[in-house]
Image (tube, rainbow, N blue to C red):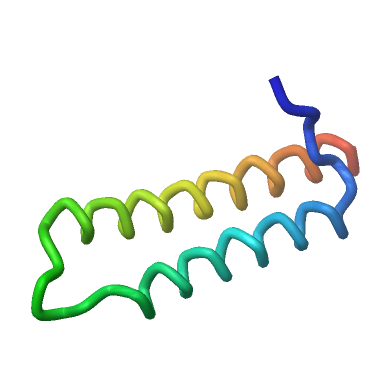
Length: 65
């Protein structure tokens, strides 16, 4: 299992990298040949980033208490 990211700078870098990957995938997609599965994968990528944001936010709130 991977180590938890608790440093705010590391959290931000992780999120930036994930969003950068999403943008690269989005730019590579050909609208004429994109399948529903491709769109589902994009949605899942965004959901994963959103979930990490929530985890980081909750973890930060616990640390700040």
